[in-house]
Length: 208
Image (cartoon, rainbow, N blue to C red; front, side, top):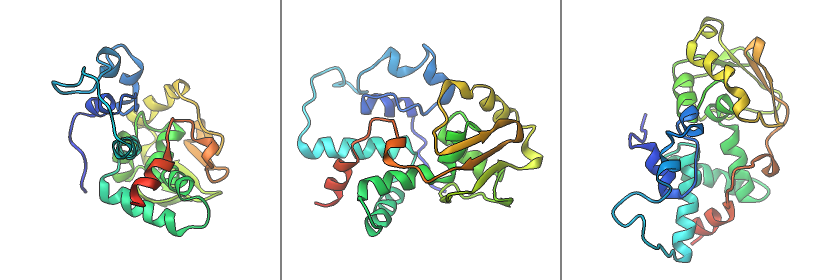
């Protein structure tokens, strides 16, 4: 499986926004973005003026990095969103939110999406009682995502559930922490995504 092995703190600094890629560390004073809130590189502290294309590219890179996708994965998802009925940008964000690794993270079973992705790949979760180890699996309305019986003593999962109060569980998910379950109440809408994203710019970029 292809993955990005670069320093994720540099990604937050490049996008000039805290992307919460390292879990609990992002909430402490050790966060690299808090200590050096400017782009990496020797010209990072200089004035940077972006063209229209540059702004669109940065927005696409930001969304892609928040959800931990590579370029080909992101482009394929965009093309699927484009074929669906409705607004392409909103469809794209909805599909990103429905990914198995994102649902595990948003439910509080992991401290970051990269940690959630690893837990899913190692087979710690099931959907409607069936083991799922594909991070890109899209959940549907009414699905129940749960920690498998043999993984409920995991220190990683239990530690994440203890710190879940640091971030808000979205309305479209219903977490039963004691039962290690999360139910998909409804498909996420654009209003449920509070992170600052301009998906319109991504549509404009790919439409050129």
